[in-house]
Length: 311
Ligand SMILES: Nc1ncnc2c1ncn2[C@@H]1O[C@H](COP(=O)(O)OP(=O)(O)OP(=O)(O)O)[C@@H](O)[C@H]1O
Image (cartoon, rainbow, N blue to C red; front, side, top):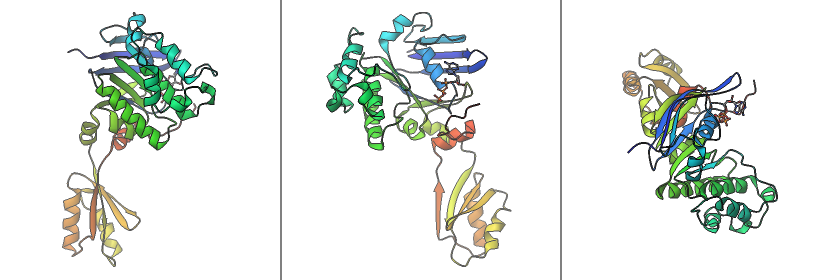
C-alpha cells in the first residue's frame, strides 16, 4: 500500500529566508507521525505545504494520492488541520464554530460529540474570546476533526494545556488514531512524541536530521553510556579522580552524593574493575537511560524547549 503522505525533497523560501531546504519523509496509513525540531526549523512550513495552504518552491508532495499544490480542493475535505494559535472571530461561540465548520463537509462528525470528547460541554455557548488558552486549544483540535478527516495535522497540539488536559488530549488522539485516522503531529514536546508517535522526523534548519521510531532513535544514536554510583563514606577523593584516566571513561562529575560517569560501551565494567582493584565497592549503581530528548539535543545541538531567539 502506498504511503498516505509522501514528501520528497521539499523546498520553500520566504524571500531570502530559506525555511525548508530539503525535506523528505513518508507517512503510512494509521500512523501517528511526529515532526520535531527547534523553533524556526521549518516544521509549520512543511505541514502548511502539505495542506495546500502554501506553495512550495520545489520537490514533490502527495497526500492521499493527490498533489496538494496542484489540487488543494481535492485534499482539503479529507485533511483536518489544527494550526498553531488558531484564530476565530472573537464572538463566535463554541457550538456555532463547530456547526459552521461541520457545514463545510459532506460527512461531518457530530459537533456535540466532539464538544463532549474535548471537555467543552459547559463552554458550548461561550464566545471564543472568553475561553481560556487551553479551551481555545481544545476547540481548535475539535475543528480539525469535525470533517471526519482521513488525515489530521495537529500543530503544537498541547501547548498551553495543563498536565491533566495534556493527558486527556493524548488519550483523545490515540482514540482518533484507533478509529483509522492518520495523524501528523508537530510538537516541541519530547514526552508527547515518545508517548504518541509511531515514528518521528527531527527537522533542523530545513532538513531532516533523524528519522525513525522513538525507540530506534534512542538506541541507534547511543554512542555514550552514563551511570551514577555512590561510593562508601571515607573513599579517598583521588579514587574518583583516577577513574578519568581509564580509557573507557570520558567524564566523572559529582552530582549531589553521587558520581556520574560517562564513557564508551564498556564504561561500567571498566569502572567497577578499577574500583575493585583498590578494594572499593560502590554502595549503589544505577544506569541512566537515554530519552528522545537526548537524541534531539545530539542531532540539533538545541534544547527542545528553546524560546524563539530573534535575529
Ligand atoms: N509567512 C512567513 N514569512 C516569512 N518568513 C516566515 C514565514 N513563516 C515562517 N517564516 C520563517 O521560516 C522559518 C521556518 O518557520 P516555521 O514556522 O516553518 O518553523 P517551525 O519549525 O514551525 O517553528 P516554530 O517551532 O517556532 O513554530 C523561520 O525562519 C520563520 O521565521
